[in-house]
Image 1 (cartoon, rainbow, N blue to C red):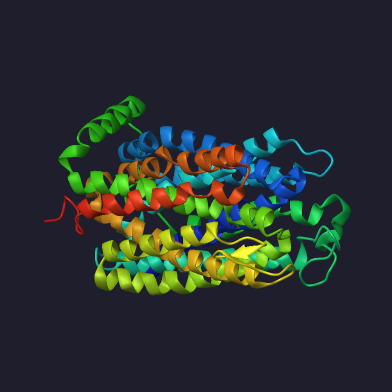
Image 2 (image 1 turned 60 degrees about the horizontal axis):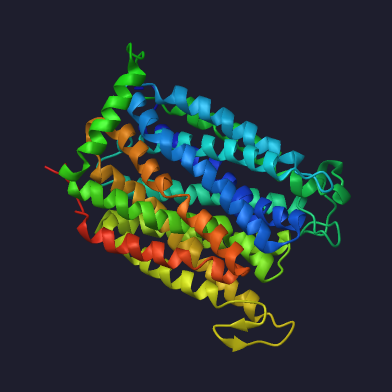
Length: 445
């Protein structure tokens, strides 16, 4: 630990955000989800299937996350767990190559996607719990914001590479740069777009190298006998005692809802634009570049606001902004914008959705960075990994609500616009519960 400088440890920790961000950027939102809509043909059917698949993965994450966190606190060596879940990330994302036109297996695709997503989420639990080891209580807001901004830059670069050299338009077979897909990939079989899975896996494997070289647990140790049963008992005791820590309890409840709503925006933004605005994968990718640029800039700015004002006012402001954005999304379609009819072929709906994307990117980057800072302030310092397991549980215990409610609302109404309205209620519930959260938490001296 001493042989590796504090600066390198911080940069190694930043590289997890850089390495893992393409799963969110390329697969969940901007490239693979719209591609699934193309394969299925029907935007509403694709949005429903995507919602049910991601909701099922969320249930698995919710059930296992707290116990894994408690086991890490008992047994130490968080790096061992990160290695394990990194393997799932790589296997799941690489397997998406097999989502080929003419031979598309929706169930296999959703299973592989869920495996990769579970790997990413579980690895994130352990890396987030390392945040307090990197700096003082006053510094972690800035460090979290810098890490999130660095991750967004990684996602942006991966997206530009994907759009410029691989993801082909279904109509022309050319990439955004007007090129044929690189590496001799066949545009007729959509091999350029399908390469998004292997590219995400390769990106992660390469850029996790600095993390594993420079990040160490302060005191890794061997697992004691009965670690699993002890972890289960500890989690049960912690959950039972949550009412005795009202600020932590309120924060877990608040983040449960607003993070679910935000994930719903990320998950369905690309597939919504593909279905409602008839955007291609390339169009959605451009939207993604704009969102990520704003996300990186404002995550960096938000980290400094977090350091100066604390995470609570930062989170409150972002929830208010995202609630307004969720309302605005419902009123943007190819035929009208905020109730005003638009002429056929007008670019106004596209421009309006680009603005929405910039706002989602800006507020989303800030709120996610500030949220993990707030979790550090709310957690018991002696049980940090378990706390981030509970944080993951809070993010996933209701994570099925946004995708499943969107899936159900879309299926019942037959409208993608009506289908995304549950996000508004989720943001508002999160905002109300935030009122009972103490800025410094229950454990502050």
